[in-house]
Length: 524
Image (cartoon, rainbow, N blue to C red; front, side):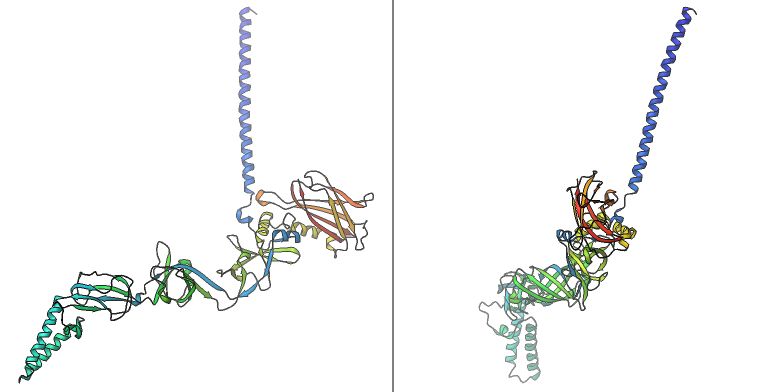
């Protein structure tokens, strides 16, 4: 091989090596991306699967029939109070805000029957009280002055014709006097005013109030010219006033004509007025979505004035007795209303009920409860939260009725259990160590206090499920064999995680349970 051929061989070999290295690098990079993509895809599938297994909010709600069992100590700690379902005649109160208004049926207008100039006012300000027939103004009217002068001329003419032999002339003179007088009377000018001499030669006509009451509006001032029919004053009899209370649309079905109403006002401290619904207006206020309801009440000592604010309470009393529970006993979950029934031995059961409109502090129950049922009044929120989290697991801090029921069904000892005839005393380190073996020692004694050495003793640790966190129920069961040296039943058990565990110790003889012990222990 020549030198030239050797050089070409070396160059070709080096080039091949470079190409091989580059190809290997490309394969490694592409394989890494493929693996990352597959890993990401697998993670996404796992995430979707885990998300799909999370229960929905609708499935997590407390279901009717859920039961929980609490020890006396837990009942005391939760502040549970119960009461018996009873009957009562409900009294429904609807509170509304209102105002005092003028009684429209008792408004009167004092008008001018003649045109003229108001030379004198006897009523000077709004709110002044007037009585029927009281003089309110003196008016100078050229038309009345002319009519008075015509009346006087007619009287003079009649006097002159009094001795006349012409009977027709005398009759015409009498008719003219009567017509002139009638014209003045229709204008509101009485005989005394017609015949009264004018001091300054200017005839005035006095106007009188046509009704009694308080002046709620004044439309005239002294010196003003008025036309016939113009309103000078508006008078209202405020011995009775109208109350207009604003009732919301959803409350309107509970309002009826003639219903009793209690009214209070700061103008009448420590006093309650009683009235009845007189009228419900047919139009709602589009801004406030309320409907005015009229209540007509007497106004003692004229203390209620138009424009004042009042508080109205519409009272409705049921004619029959209803099954009722206190409002605190009913839990509204949104989709249903739940109460908790107190059963014997510390068991509480969720019961769905149907209720009507509340009255004071009571709910009428239309279905779900009967007389004599014992319902939880206080502490039901704690019970419901435990039922919601543990999906029916019993015990404030753990324990499962479902597990207990299945264990009871499968255990031969439980199937032939009798009343406990022995007592168990459990000893262990507190707190327990999660994930490690813990020593449990139990002493079993008979009614005479002597130790029982031939029993079968088991310990069950239970932590309730937590659906909201995706955690199932955890349990651990182990036996405690008899220890001759310690004269006790001794064994080891391991709580799987930190938290509060429900502990049940059971001793049996020949398949018959002779003693059971329940407690709660914390693991750290």
